[in-house]
Amino acid sequence: MSMAKCNISLVVIPLLLHIICFLLFPHTLQSQENGFSRQPSREFVFTSHERSDSDPQQVHISLVGKDHMRVTWITEEKDSESMVEYGTNEGEYSKKTIGEHTSYKYFLYKSGKIHHVLIGPLNPSTTYFYRCGGLGPEFSFRTPPLKLPIEFVVVGDLGQTEWTKSTLKHIDSKDYDVFLLPGDLSYADTHQPLWDSFGRLVEPYASRRPWMVTEGNHEIETIPIIQPHAFRSYNARWPMPYNQSGSTSNLYYSFEVASTHIIMLGSYTDFDEHSKQYKWLQSDLVKIDRKSTPWVIVLLHAPWYNTNEAHEGEGEKMRQAMEALLYEARVDLVFSGHVHAYERFTRIYDNKADSCGPFYVTIGDGGNREGLALTFKKPSNPLSLYREPSFGHGRLRMVNETHAHWSWHRNNDSDTFVADNVWMKSLSSLKECWELGHQEL
Image (cartoon, rainbow, N blue to C red; front, side):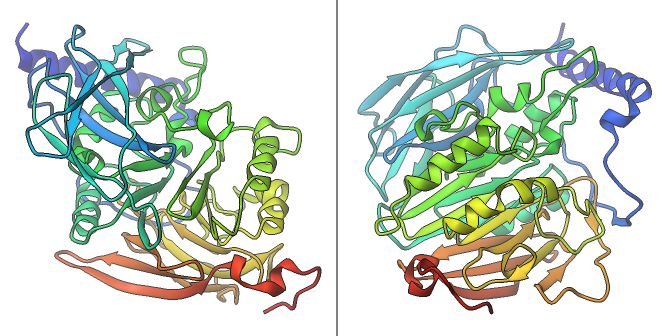
């Protein structure tokens, strides 16, 4: 069979299965519209495979510990070696590491060979050149700095549309150190070739800067009876450093980079006070040394605070279960996705303005195929300081131990536009927040 026919069958057969599953189990695959109005997204983008079967594709990197990087890629050729050669000079590879590989089946779909190789120790703020499996193109990445300042890009609900391409282009127009994504990556929604398309779409960006992600509802991908196990594709393709933080699940973990402790929580796994995630979070927060790690950030998918009519109240149970833990630990910021709009709140605890609570930001506006969540409640809640149903991305720059700058960049057709920005102080620097009592805002 020719390569063209193979590619067509890989797309058409799962698509037919997707339609059958939609007819049999419509409640599983339908997006949660809840009656609210969405602006249509731009055209869907399918990124095809244009390299040989033995060449690496869908290359992306992620942080592991303080000085290692995981390199992940896929080959159609099953005999390809899980090996990364790397060095600090272009075309010269002074080191070589052998890793592991996996694959998975999803109904009639079978993935390519998914390679995971851990390389390091690596020096901070250093550009490395690398090659995967001894074949194909050379890639490069720069490691994050050891100390502040550091800049994060934050964007959720990315998908793969023309808006996604616009968002990624705008992100790439200005340098940054680490990419943070609070759930809903590919919007494959059981149609597995879309995972491959997504991997190829983001490769030019995710192969150059570490992408740290957590799961959203579109990563669940269960089908009653046929495919009962959740997160199979996500876990196989996007492993995160959960073991290093004492977690037993790829759905929640933490890591540290440049005096910043980042916690990725799972909105779609157990989170009550008896759950493994809750107990892990308790343990993780206690271990943070705010003298050496003055900044603490949390990312999750379903927002705990939200004045949009979309997905109203879906994060409430998790908030009730875990909010006190974040408040007592003086977490600085909580980012979420899920709602396809941008919204920034003041510092909050238990539905009230509180000068020692986290700032809450919803940023589920990366470029998904479902369009924007246009309807915000009226009148505006005084806790909500800025809200806008537009596609875009955010940048968080930790300038030093006491001050950080947040900005949200709206997508325009040709340019990115800074529509919202604010300076903030770290809670670790506010003595009143570490005393028994404090005044509300």
